[in-house]
Length: 278
Image: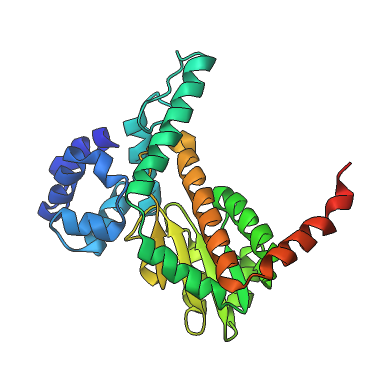
């Protein structure tokens, strides 16, 4: 990516050269930016100019452009957070690096946690008549945990991995609906579009790693995570742990906010699946 930008530099317009100079000088920052942030910090203040640039370089969208840059930065590292994992690492080194990366990421997120956003999310969730859950791939695995937890609290929950069904249900949201969406990059169309459609009636809560992402910008409450991962090979491994912790935080706080009887309900639901165990 950086080689391509340097190679094409002299063939670009003055505006595109300015964008390229910023990317070349700040590649690790750029992979964490939304298209609007890149427009702002590069000084050109035009998202359309960035669109023209990545299309000129034969990329289909900004996400593809950014991921290719992330791959180049990560190089031969499979896992890039606070301490890279490389092919020469043995089992012990890999294990220690992953654990240490997770611990440091959790500590950093705890230091920067936005308690106001969490409190607002808890209030919205507590009053929800129905939860519509949106998340795919890695985020889909997290959303499955959300689905099970809030079912245990007695919520009417809706969750599907079929984007077409999600589009249908969010096309006519009901009063009291809350859309709960998770996307690390915050630019997954199958999450952002149905969440946007539902906003005419429903509240939207988001968990994302990019505070100026399309998902964050349309959410009533956006809880933002911090992760130093860059390599596409990691598929945001550490950020998943932070997301799971945040789900537990919301789950416990919502449970406490409802009423003391909720604990009897949780016990009853736990007993209802006891026959599945020896």
